Amino acid sequence: MDWKTTLNVSQIILSIILVVVILLQQQGSGLGSMFGNVGGESYRSKRGAEKLFYNATIILIVLFIVNGLAIAILSANS
Image (cartoon, rainbow, N blue to C red; front, side, top):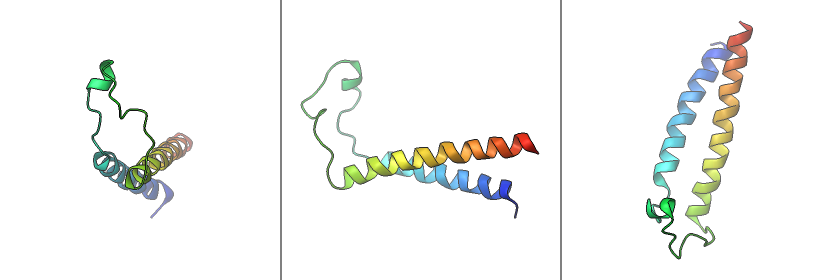
């Protein structure tokens, strides 16, 4: 197995995990806050599992982007 195949498989795995972590996050505010209907819970701190999912999402996004850039660089060089 070469590097390109390994990176492609890891990109697929990262994307699946990222979708699962995003879907598991709490659905607290809904679409109302997007259009200016800010509720009382918009500025509260994250605790427990909510904070874990939030931090995991950030880490997975960074890994996803770095992995995508590595795939692009390897594809350009070959």
